[in-house]
Amino acid sequence: MKSLLGSSLKDLENVALNYGQAAFRGRQIHNWLYNYKNKKKNIDQIAVLPLDFRNQLKQDGFKVNDLKLNEKYLASDGTLKLLLSTGDHESIECVGIPAENRLTACLSIQVGCPMDCKFCATGKEGLKRSLKASEILDQILFIENEMNRRVTNIVFMGMGEPLLNIDELLLSIRSINEDFNISQRKITVSTVAIPKMIAKLAEKSFQVLGKCQFTLAISLHASNQIVREMIIPSAKNYNIKNIVEDCKQFVSNTGRRVSFEYLMLRGVNDKIEHADELIQLLRGFQCHVNLIQYNQINEVEFKQTSSMRIQLFQSRLFNNGIAVSFRKSRGSEKNAACGQLRQNANNK
Ligand code: SF4
Image (cartoon, rainbow, N blue to C red; front, side, top):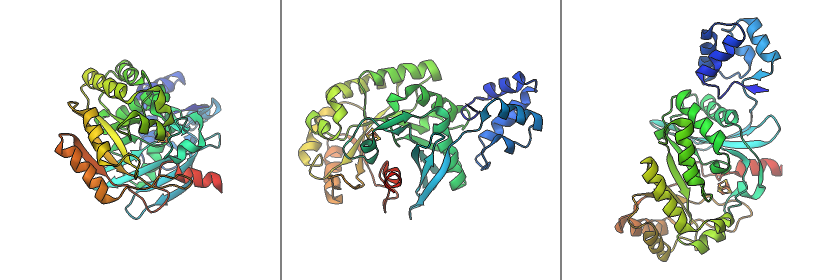
């Protein structure tokens, strides 16, 4: 099967030309494909195309894409979480996070994840496979369909590790930029960090996209190597100080800012001594620290840090010259943590 989703305008014009059609037929497919108001997702629905062209495309194995909506959960704050099934009956999650002037799509990049972070429901399931660009992009269309508005911002913070699916990540970013008209500056790629891959991400971005203007977010979650290895087992391969050095190089190579995500876990990484270690680690580096409230999940022993302790931690960083913000969990009544909807479905 050949998925149309993820094809550029040029690709689709070439498809049309290959079938003896005029190039504008490719533009018609492109307009239809990336219009979120088209809720039906099969070639028969592209009514502007001649019937015989549609039939030829189907006969030759073309399809729009094959994700299906399995379940949705709308939180009282408007956050929408979707459980989608793939053509091979795996399931993935994506989330639409609305605000007044923006709609952020949080996308999955793999089915499951091999990184085994101890605070994460997805990590408990292991990796099934990486997603294709078409499956990554289809998540955006599902969110737009369901929320009846355009996505304005993208965060790769759903299931999976983006740096382990770098080729499909970059193909997706190209399409998000050119086909969905969302600028690279409104895209954030979040990673727990894999040795050598931060430099490779910048290098491949320049090769594939011609530029590297998205934001890199490192899931740091600790102020020292010992705590980091305790909560992110894969961290043993990559010293925390080397991560910071590689991030400095990324900033110097791309001119983009790096942010460090820091999940606040009660009694684990939320003490003032941890704030002081973080200040030492990041001193002199023009970066941003994003403190995140933890959503508790079943079968995991970590607990949420109190608001007062988060404020103390934040003030300590701020008063020592670290740019810092606090992100409160959205859609936090239930099923809000990464992988939780999928885990619940798998347990049914
Ligand atoms: S937090 Fe992210 S990297 Fe870690 S196991 Fe979960 S999905 Fe994978």
